[in-house]
Length: 288
Image (tube, rainbow, N blue to C red; front, side):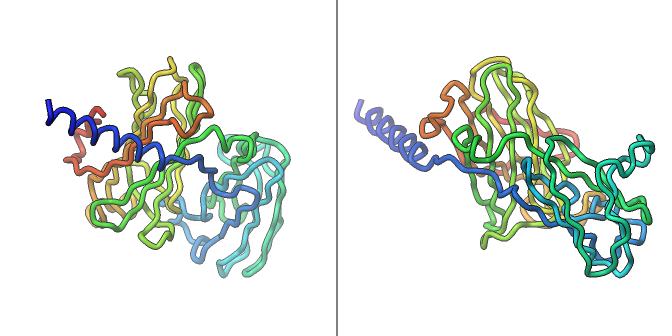
């Protein structure tokens, strides 16, 4: 009986510590985003790593501004549209015309949606602006947060998640930083989410050039807990797996309980780092 009481006491302490550590956290500031057309983007090849514009996806709120800077030696354009799939719609939303090295082009977005764009001179250069309908302030109390450092102390994984009701999708924002808080480039990872034994999100081999990834689950079937799991696969270009560095197989987990709604202090968040065997053929999600 005594040993059981001691064990129960430590379980309670662990849960209390987890609850105290949980605080609502807003996503990154999306009022203004800077995008670079990097050196060398005028030469084909950057499209293979989705790095012709950095970041390739600019995420802002309605009313936010995106500023493109030409850091290349050649002149570029920032022209809205998808040249391959919808050539008749090219340039209808915005068109910078040619701007040379060191010059900038800015655009304010007043409508929510996804706005693909490209360079008319170098059409392999593509990117997208994603404009969110709701501001971060409106969502601040509808999110939960967890983070943990990899086993070797080199990669900190932050997971932010919305807290949807049954029938709604869950938004998941993942950020990778080093021990000093600097964003890490070229992170490869798997992300999965389970609810009531059903997989509501499965993305294997995700690659983030600029440290941040946005993911969306299927519509949730119930108010049951959702277990989110991020597995670090390594650091490096996606087509050069043999040269990847950093931690491989570290797992960060977060559990979100939708029925708790805006009572963020009661959301059971778990930051766990564990080492699992990661192979190309099998990646299994351990149950919490």
